[in-house]
Image (tube, rainbow, N blue to C red; front, side):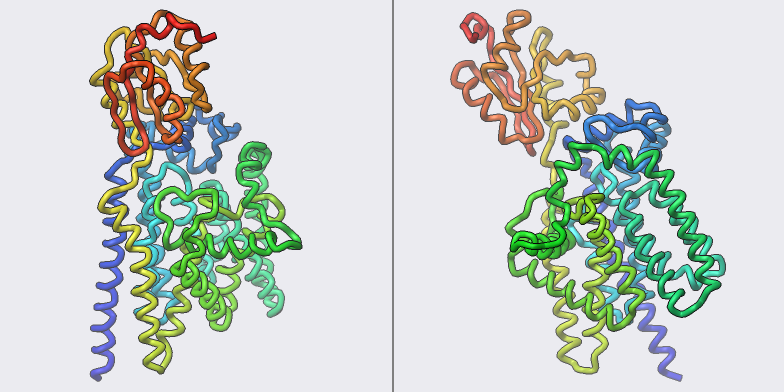
Length: 514
């Protein structure tokens, strides 16, 4: 009689532990969200699109500034703006909520597929403190929603056969979700294809018929979705060129080709557990450092244990990765950078299977190793996440620059802004007393002094000239250094990758610049 009581007490302790981990993950995300950093270039361009474009154009036409986002995401943000306003903290709310909801889906999956408390706590801890999941819970882009919906589809895919109307629930989910997340189709394809082929192999033709109807509904919905939305994105030459490094070489024939595949494992490991801030599009030194190599090996080990334990779970999780890779080979979807953030919770779950396998062993040293691995991986991520918690990332603090400009701008002053700052200035100027302030000069992306002077002297004789920079902040010196040697710098403000500078250029146009 004592064993069931002990089991219940243990269960309550485990639930408390898991909910405590969820709370910690929520606090990390809330801190990032409430810090309310400035929108950076891509965020501002997307926000300007959603604010300015009518709903019909927003959903069914190509977005300006080479932006791309699923129509459901755009519609949700448009509705938020209509009812609550367009401030940055408001438009980030759906993204923040998706970053929080992923914790609860992770909780449900952990208790379902992982057999030990250590693995369940590890999985939930990895999700909670993953620096990339924390950061992107406040990034005004769809990537946090991608990660949440990918894990949601994994949860539904694992369970729909057990539910009374599971096939219809999953069918409906598969029709709706891709409108909110482009890469969700890869997870759907993994679940649907595995279950269909396994049903055919078992000769369960009743289930085959249901799955064929379900998958056909997905294909029909996706065809409409592709025609109305994705077609414009896939034909965008700029995006194709920008993400060309993410297309897999096939067949791999050279050392560089084979290294591309190896580097994707390293990249996925780094993004999932160590990426602090925006995911870059170029390789990082951290990919080849010991912590990342260690985590990469855990991913491989987890994949092996997953294959040995459950072929279906293997087919769903690894299949999602393989199908995404196939899309990359066909040059339909780049397998790189922030576009694979949706795979982060899947990779974390794969690592957790390695922990679970060790923790189930009767050998004490394996259990000890499992505990050490959980602590080690959590600490690797926590170093970055705590760093961001103590001082959240704000690499483009244009709000601070505009606040300084608002307080010190005089009538008759001239304002010049860098070309990279235009989208963020267009978004934020309405929230400062600057919305009617004319921008006299757009500083070209080369920061060429001669062109700047030509633009400056083509109008009225200047006096005080303000120059505003955000995004690619280090490039400002190409223009500011020569100007500061010739003209008095009256005031300046710099912080977090943005700055504004006031020069006295009242005598500038008396010189010959042509």
